[in-house]
Image (cartoon, rainbow, N blue to C red; front, side, top):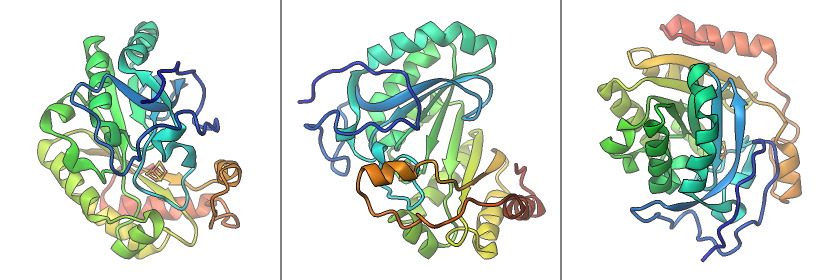
Length: 276
Ligand code: SF4
C-alpha cells in the first residue's frame, strides 16, 4: 500500500519520478468503486490552453500508450506519481473555484491517461460539479470503453487526442491500436457530447497528408466536434526521456515548422473542420 502524500502545485514540465514505489502496474490496475485515493503527477492553476477560460489542470499518473513524442513520460507509471486522496484534490480545487467560475473556466483532468484511474477521476469530477465548475478531460480514448454514461454525464467537454488515422502509423506512434479511439469518438458523436479533437503534428511521423486527411474526413461530419487543434511537436519533454534513461527515438526530430502547421490546418479546414 502506498503512503498517502501531499500533491504540490507545479507544472506538467516538472520531472517527478519514483514517488510511490509500491504502486501497482498501470496495465493491470482497476481502482476500486470508491476512487477515494489515486496517483497524481501535478496540477497547474492557471492554464488557458486546456479547455475554455481559466483552468486548473490536474495531471494524473498512468498511461497504457507509449507515444514516441510523449512530453511527459514521468506520467506513464503509477509508481512515479504521488498517492493522494480525492478529498485533498477537491479541497484544493475549492480554493480556486470562485476565480475559475468568474473567468468562465473550470477543471481539466489530463495525464497520463485519466481513465486508467476511472473511479478516482469520477470522484474528482463529481466534486467539481458540486462546485458548479465546467469540467473537461483530456484523453487518448484508448480506454473509452471503460467510461460509462454516468461518468460522461459529469463531463462538459472531451479533449480527444486522435494521434493518427492510419492504423499502422498509430501503432508505430503509440504502441497501441487505433480502433478503440475511433469507436469512442463515434460514441461521443452519437451522444452529441462537446468535443475538441487534438492532433500532434510530428515531422516525419504523423505529417503524411493522407494520414491527416483520414482524421479530417472522419471528424468533419461529427457535429459535436467544436474544434480540431493542431499541436506542433516540440522538444520540451526531451530532458525527461534522458533523465529517465528511456531510448528517445525523436531526439533529432525538428519541431514542426509554422508552414507545416499551416498546411495541416488547411487540410482540416478543406474537409470542413473548424481547425486552429
Ligand atoms: S497518451 Fe499522452 S501521456 Fe500517454 S504516452 Fe501518449 S502523449 Fe504520453
